[in-house]
Amino acid sequence: MNSKAYKANVLKLTMLAVMMIVVTLAFLFVGVKFHNEKLLRYAMKLRIPKVLAMIITAFAIGGATIVFQSVINNTIVTPCLLGMNSLYTLIHTSVVFVLGSGSVIFTNSNLSFLIDLVLMGVIATVVYSWLFKMTGYNVLYVLLVGTVMTSLFSSIQSTLTRIMDPNEYDTLLTSLVASFTNINSEIIIFSVLVLALIILIFRKELALLNVITLGKEQAINLGVDYDRCIRKLLLLVTLCIAVATAMVGPISFLGLIIANISRQLLKTYRHSQLILGSAFIGVVALIGGQFVVERVFVYSVPISVFITVVGGIYFLYLIFIIVILLFNTIFHVQVVVFLTLLVAAIVFSLSHSPY
Image (tube, rainbow, N blue to C red; front, side, top):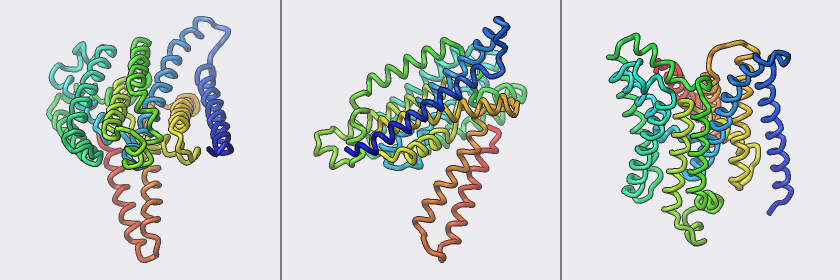
């Protein structure tokens, strides 16, 4: 054990925790009129649920991304590849298409959250548990099928939006963008309970993460049931993403940003530190970003939109670094430029999609 590195990481985590507390207090109390009790209560009623939702989202997505990257053994992948974001948009589009935007399922946030969570949880559990077993416990097949499912869900959702009533489509768009505005205490409490239950159920597998990253042969030699552990960890990742997505909506690239910054900042194999670092960075990014958007620039645009843009740029940066390492000669500069432009075109088309 490298005690110096461990202590250095503890210090870094402490600094991140302090930053998290500072941005949280700033978001809660800046601009509040303390002399007016009614206005103070009203401000807290609006801001506290937002803060709690952002904290839960950061911990769920940050932790799930670290686990997912360790299982896949690739630091530029995100749980978005499992298709939960696309499934969320398909569920909401189907509800509006079949029942209309005035239906109780669409207008009641508690019922909508419950349906999203149940459908995504059941589909993830059935599909990925069965699929992982049928493919001989090969995580690469899971990634492939997740990508195919994402395309399938997106195609169905796109078809439905093109043939639905334009007025219904305008109403639908508001629910397809991640937002921390319409979160009530019931949803927050239920989300915390579900995440706590997930962690409790998979606590043994989480404790084996450091061993799992040593490789399959090493883990088996140390007495770990590798395939069973990987299957349960993938299920944990999918359920955590399902909770976060059902609560606030899909947030692309958030996990990629905070997980990679955590790995670069802490440089450790200890997943307890990596997960905490990722969660703390996520809280700072979400609450700090929301504070800047709402109080400095006075925009009504959700912070998730800016995270998608920044995440796309950061993804290009990661791809560019990898390509440079693979093609470290002047002869392959054209390949680097081509691949960079290709990825840029893909990210641009996704970020400008009306869905």
